[in-house]
Length: 116
Image (cartoon, rainbow, N blue to C red; front, side, top):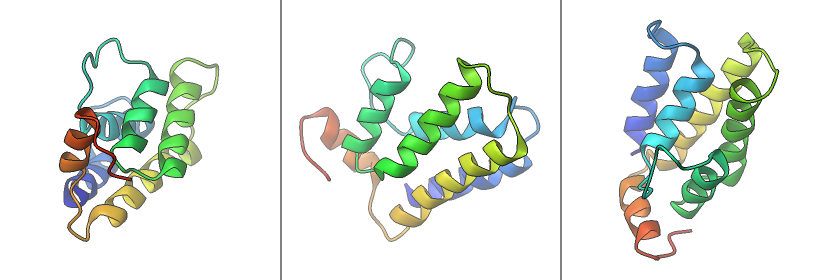
C-alpha cells in the first residue's frame, strides 16, 4: 500500500487532468478504503475508516480538513493547500512503505478487526 500511495503522490504532481491536488489526494486516500457505500459515505465516515485501517490520524485529519474546506467551504484551492495534501499522502506512503499493507488493514477494519 505504501508504494501505491507513493505512486499516487507522484501522479498528483504530474497529472493535469484532475481538478486539483487536494481532490486527487483525497481520492487516493479514500480509494484505498473498504467502505459499504462510497458514494454516500461522508468525509467524516471516510476519516474514521482511514484511522481504523491504520492510517495516521494527523494525516487523515489534514486531508479531511483540506478536502472539506475546498469542496464544501468557501476556501480556495491554493498552492499551499495542494502541497499540504500531497505531503500528507507522502507521509502515508512513508508510514506503510516498510511492508505494512493498508489493503489488509482496511479488510480487517471492515471485518471488525483492530489494526491500530
